[in-house]
Length: 322
Length: 275
Image 1: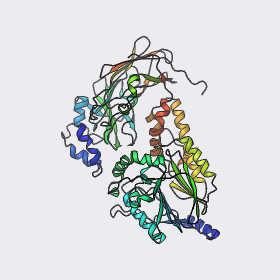
Image 2: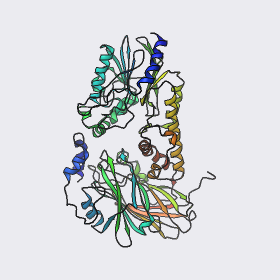
Image 3: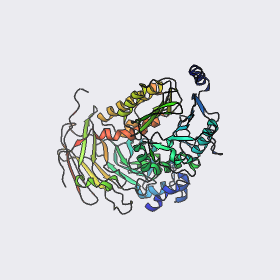
Image 4: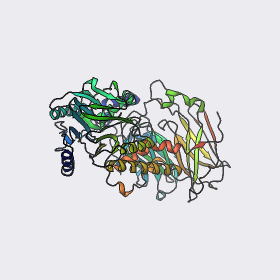
C-alpha cells in the first residue's frame, strides 16, 4: 500500500466529490442508487443525506461502511431496510470482486443501523450484549415505526437480532489492525471502529456532521467522554454516523458543542420551571445554522431529556392523605 | 372505539394514516355555518358536539396549542395551551384531541390564574390537538394544531401497571414554585397516579378527576378536571396569581375516579440564591 499516494488521492477526492450520491434514491423503482465512495485503501463509505427519514429518501440518511481486506469484508451497519441491505450487499460484492463478508457490525440499537440485517448471513452479524438486548426488546416497535415513515421502502423488512456478542478488542484482519471500541452516550452502547492501518475512524452515531445529533436514548455525559476518547485516537479520516466524511476532528467538536449547549440550555430551563413546550421555543444559537434539522431535533431532544431534568427540580409536598 | 383504534397499529404497516382516518369516518357533513375548521379534521363536527355540547365556537388564533410536530412517545405528549389576553377573561379551557378514543384531555378553570397550562397526555394516532377557551359571552374560542403520531398511547397499559410501585405512593405530590417578576407564580406539580384509560385490555379506567389549588385562606386559585388521556404521573405547569406571591402555603385537594383523595400542602419553594 502506498500511503502518501493514497492520502493525496483522498484529499483530492474529498475536495472534488463532496456528497457521494450520483443520483438520489428513486421511490418508484425502489432503487437507493447506492455508490461506494473510497476513503482509504480498501475502505468505502455509502454516504446518506443529512435529511430526516422520508418516503423520498427511503431512509438513506445514514452512513454505512465496509472494509475490503485479504481475509474478507467487514461491514459497519446495514442501513434502514431489507431493500437497503440487499442493494448494499450487492454493491459490496461488486466493489470487492465477490470476497466473502466475514463480519457485520451493528454499531448500536437504532433501526437505521440494523434493519438491513436480513440481507447478510446471520452468523456474520455482531453487536454488543447491550445492543443485542436493545434490538431484541425494541426491534419490532422500531420496525413498525419505520414502515410508517418510509412506506414501501420497508417491504418485507423484519428485525434480525445478531447472535454473536461483540466485545472491545483489537484484531488484525487481512492486514488491517482494527480496534473495536465499545463506548456509550448516543445510546447505552455504541461501537466505534478504528482502523489503525488506514487511519480511518468509523464513529457511527457518536459523531454527527452538519446534522443535528439525535438523542432518543442519549446520556450526554458519557457521550462527551466518548468523543474525547475518540479524539485521542489520532485518526486521519472520520466517518460520522450521519453527515459527510471529514479529514479532521471538526465533526467531533461540532457534536460536542451541540451536546454541551443542549445540556446547559435544558438544565437552565429546568431551574426556571419552564414547561416542555416553552423550552421548544427557546432560541438556538446562530453557530448551529450549518447543522440540518436543528429545530426539529431540538424539540425531539427536549422530549427525550427535559422531563427528567424538570422532575429533578421538584420536592415532595409537606403532607399527604390516603 | 378503543378496538377500532387498536387495529390502526397493524394497518399502518400497509396504509398511510390519513387513509385510515378518512375511511373510518365520513361523519356529519360540515355543519358549522360560518367558519371552516382550519385543521380540516373529519372529526370536528363530532367532537364539537361531544366535547363542547355543540355550543357556539369561533376559531381564534389567540388560543394557541404548542406541541411537538412529531410525537415519538405516545404515552407522554407535551402540550402547552395559552390564551392571549385580547380574548378577554376566560372561565374555562377544554383541551381535547379529535382522534383520541376519549377526546377530552382536561378542563381547566383558571379562576384568578393566567389562562395558560402545560401538561402531557396520551395520544392514540395522528390527531388535531385543540384548546377551547370560553369567554364571558359563552363563546368557545378554539385553537389547535396537528400532531403526527405513531399511535397506541391510549390503549397501552401504563408503566405503573407493570411495576405497581405506584400503589404505596398513590396521589403523592411533588412540586416547585417559582415567583415571577410580573407578580405571578409558576407552579410545576406532579402526582403519582397510573391514569389508566380503561382501554388497555383487562385494566379498568382509573384516573384523577378533580384537583383544586387553594391559597392559605382557602381561596381557590385554579381548578383542574383531568380526564383519562392525561399522562401517567401527570405534571401540570400553572401560572397562578395569588394575593401574596411566594409567601403563603398553598393546598392541593382533589381525588380520582375510585374516590382516593389528594391532599397536599405546597409551601413556598426555596429559591436559588443569586443565580
